[in-house]
Length: 394
Image (cartoon, rainbow, N blue to C red; front, side, top):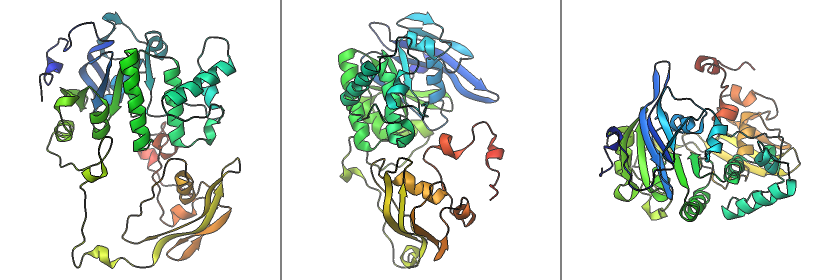
């Protein structure tokens, strides 16, 4: 791709001047027969946002977990500011100025935002000081989080913001972001990266942005490391590449792309579908396969979530529901999962009413739900794949 493309096999640094904030050489980690990381080299430089790009399962998160001390490498070395270090746990990493915002949350839901941010402090607890700092960071990064909100009452997008605040409050010199925008809107993502760009430049921090989203990698980073099957496949300067080249390196073949995202206007979206005469899509039945009539729900605090909500989905169609996080989408999914009590309204399948407050009835009739957070409500992490696939008994 450019002069950095083959640096992963050269064994030497690709940078000149002061040593990078973090240098990792030949980091490897194997789980049974799976090689999650295979002699991976990476350098995180102050004043830059370094994109780590790859498909799911490429080894990105495992690499970052070795840098933060959550996973111990089988072999390889890590240096901070040119000095070899051993990172045995996240406390070691924090002492070295390395912080990480994880893809999956590590919050205590019964506590408030400021209490979660304060967890792990060794100093005397000062509620006013911590609340003020949370509010300051929230304003600086455009995160809009109330320090006194209880985490269990927050939607997923807001919880991601709390994770960011937890990390930023400790003022790390190296900040690792693992899929930080998975539950943020494009506008929120762009605002976050603009704030990060300002901090990286003014405070000389190093940032690693882990993602599989080409648009945000191209928009936010200075250089890119691309991983596939646990190994570094390519490296490049962001200014010297494009989405097609990155996609080809990610998957190992040519990929036809058409998307809009960060830094792209709506006119850049070129995916269009046109029905031809006689297309089956024109023969969709008028009757609703799934219908919600006047559904109303409230939170545990009595806050109205769905207010006389109705929709109808016909056979043969994909029905899109759009909205900023926290406007009722999660409650709607919980209603269809049988996990949210309905105070009024009806749910119908093929015109037949299904009791919405009887757990399992919708699933028994054929309504399947894929949740937004697979770790929280999609799978049981301590069980095997086959055990998770066992059918539910109603």
